[in-house]
Amino acid sequence: MRGVAGNARLVWRGRTLNADGLVVIGATRHLLRIEAGRVVACTREIPLLAATRFTIRGSAAAWSALWQPLPAPGWHDLLALTKRGEMAIEGDTQPVMAHLQYLKDLLALPRAGAADGR
Image (spheres, rainbow, N blue to C red):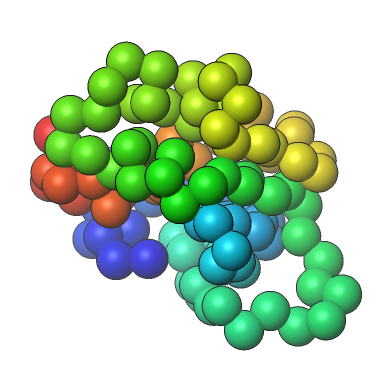
């Protein structure tokens, strides 16, 4: 993902996370390999029976709402979207909860202004 390697604060926040996770945006799946807070691979070519620790799944509309420059209340955060039923966190939730702020910040990077810390 763009913006991760150049964001020292974000890398530091995720420094203890080493995991493969699946992020599903509508019908499009992305396999993320995270090592020491760095996204070392992001691919849509997912091997058959690929092992992942967690999956974060949401509709394209939910992701689009999350990535608005100023998202509406209830559409601003992974957990808020989960509470609304617009997203789901599946699999081993331990690494997600242990690194929740890192993952929230990582997945908000496509939001306008997110890469520069706004």
